[in-house]
Length: 73
Image (tube, rainbow, N blue to C red):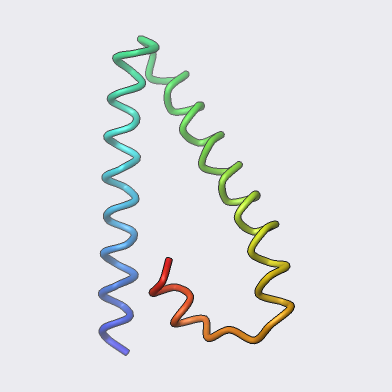
């Protein structure tokens, strides 16, 4: 069980690092932090919604080990 906690922690840290990097890159491109953060959050939420919609159907149709699915992702 501690291995999964470490994996969740590392996954969260890497997501935060990606968010900071994208914010800085878009701030250079757009020139305003508010607009760049808004763009990042919009794309992130749209990705969550789309992934939930597409993978939800697949997971409901056939039994899948959630731990193996998480490891594969």
